[in-house]
Length: 120
Length: 109
Image: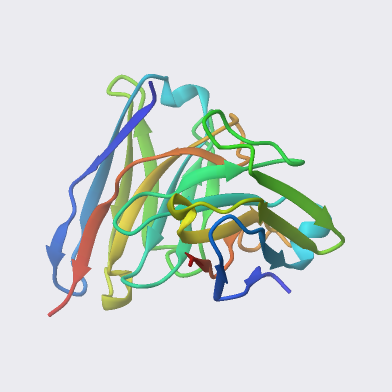
């Protein structure tokens, strides 16, 4: 069974950094593209960024490009999201999502999410 | 344009048929993917590719596409079908890479 568990969320001040983790089980993250998707309170889904099977960056959404970095540790079977220069508008639940393919297609499994609050 | 447009809300009587639509230029070259999200929960994949349902999704869910519009149809809606539905696709322009529609809130009366 595929399981994705996010951790590392919390409350931070604007300008601070935070790193989210996504522990995967039931599959090898190195065999698939992996993504981060976020959802601001009461709003819709927004793709944040992703990593394909060979660690190549799939890219980032406009609103986070240059501030956020997606990485992974195959030995720990975990995906990470390094978030720097955080802004209040980054407040959201961040979901880790597994892609159905190595290069990126659509998301067939999601974690339960980690809440990040950016406020002074 | 590089965006997907959905109606904000749709209601349907129990047992009746409802259709949710998603419009966008990217849908002329990419299939839409549909996700269901219930309050406080993660999204769940309900439709992908050309009318394909993941294991465990009831066959009352079906998908179709024509031109720049994709549709998700629920034939015989059940109370448990209530929730938010999001369409998604790759971005043909390569700018946004993956896009989501704004979501449609489905209410079963």
